[in-house]
Length: 161
Image (cartoon, rainbow, N blue to C red; front, side, top):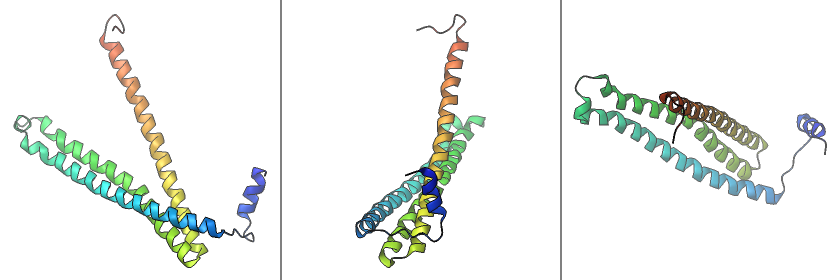
């Protein structure tokens, strides 16, 4: 089928998409798995926040860092950055949870609006993760090129094994 025809069918308000019984069963099973993963992700986010707080608290227990130098701020800054990353990842986890909730509601009540909301949340979930992956890949490439550049510039004769 031609892609333009598919898009035209999607945009046509008069067309109806019917889910077979098997498709509804798969959607219900998928919503259960998605809810389980969302709950595990929330637990992971909670552990991440606790890890960030413990990193910040760790700075006070290191006697070599409490001598008034700026190194004493390193665990606090690391903990804050860690918590910020956890909060950034909380958005797609919330969208994942909302997808699971709405998908389950749509199959139980045979509600098209709930299914639409579920799909909207699933779309947002994948969009968030796609953008985050692109950002992290960019950071990885910058870090790799930065390390290679540092290694190359630290030797006067170039790179040596």
